[in-house]
Image 1: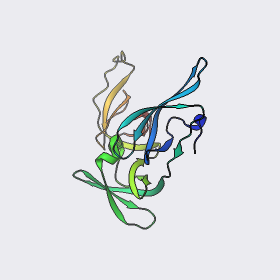
Image 2: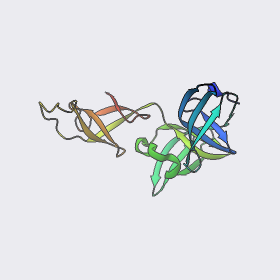
Image 3: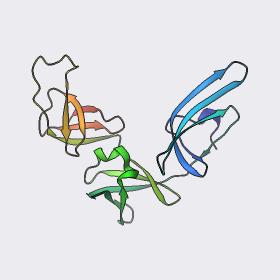
Image 4: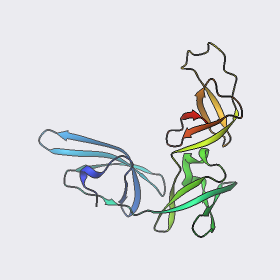
Amino acid sequence: MLNFNEIKLGSIVKFNNEPYVVTFAQHLKMGRGGAILKTKLKNLINGNVLEYSLKGSDKMEEAELKKIKASFLYKEKENYFFMDENNFEQFFLNKNILGDKIKFLKEGIITNILNFEKKPVAIELPPKIELKVISAPPGIKGDTAQGGTKAVTVETGAIINAPLFINNNDIIRVNTETGEYVERV
């Protein structure tokens, strides 16, 4: 069980017998009423978001998620195929489970699949990955009024804001949590 003070952004809790991730958490101190924790919880199964307030004495159960180490193999229509690194079994996940992390999936990348009661509910990518730039418009000298960045397309189809010196076929490191350029490799 997680106390009032242990519930933070990114915590995964069990609420109404379903797993939720805390996407917003703010402690509010009321005058004589005590402290309140306002949260937004996103359901990991269906994606619904709800707001929930906790009082100082409230607790939430921590969701037990099993992590499976898997490598991404390929995509076929709406399904993304993975291989379990422990027993080499292949399985697929629908794009709805993967969400916006699809744009960072490339063949061979090692991920963690989070299972709740033997059902996959989410995916964890490495914090940073290396991607090849397939389309980069030319950087025009003196075009730094907007901070000196340009939109480049990487091999997975994601569009990343990168510095003007990035060209086609460069390998760049990208933060998978924020989707931002980190460095050229």
